[in-house]
Image 1 (cartoon, helix red, strand yellow):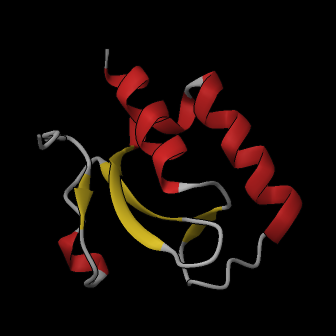
Image 2 (cartoon, rainbow, N blue to C red):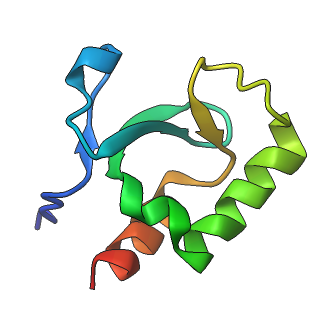
Image 3 (cartoon, rainbow, N blue to C red):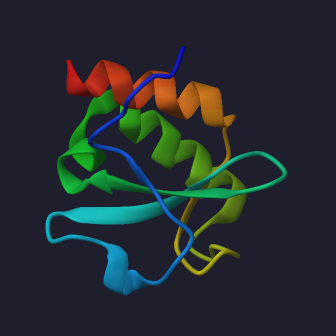
Length: 85
């Protein structure tokens, strides 16, 4: 059974693919996947916790060239699902 996630866009292209009002983030512990999320997520307390973890691990030097979040993909998807509801 597939889960449809209309607001999270998984892509592997360039910044041109990011719609207005969204930003790209890279998620994963070893292999990183790119997700495009609404900018409104960045101000949510749950998402702020992930941003704090990213700051602790990477500082402001993100190796992927974009915001990198060091958590498992399933945790990220679960969190963004909760933010949408």
